[in-house]
Length: 170
Image (cartoon, rainbow, N blue to C red; front, side, top):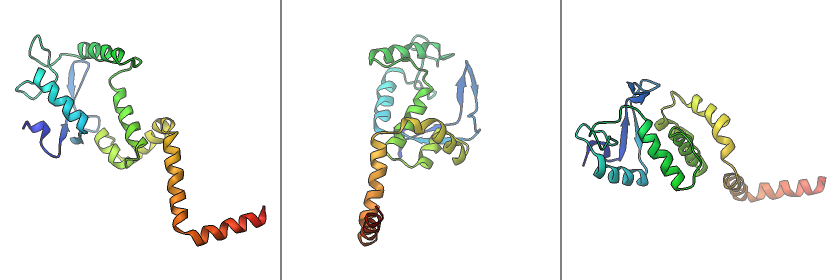
């Protein structure tokens, strides 16, 4: 099994490529990202097409080398989005989609922030309240309300007393 897919099925992020130049991560730290099953399967399918001995997964099929810049992969990305009837968006938006989905299903924000490379929990908290929270609504609100309902049902005598007092005041 290749190093990049060894259990617990994580990938190592230690560098970035931006405008045809290699650079460190924004925090200058190595991080490991847990992969969800669909991502693992997608990487395994991609590996069969474009795996290179130097460890790059996405390489130029004409040259056998990694892409010099992101223009060609982005063309493929935009074509794939059109194919599934999604509006155009940059590939970087996938990180926001990932964070929003994780939070929507109730994942711990601290767990979500680590693979995204946030320097600390305060940065993620700021992003959560300024960016992600507006997308987490609907079912999430129902789930949050259900948490309080479940808590209150667990202490029936106190809540019943409170309900009676409220009824007396009304």
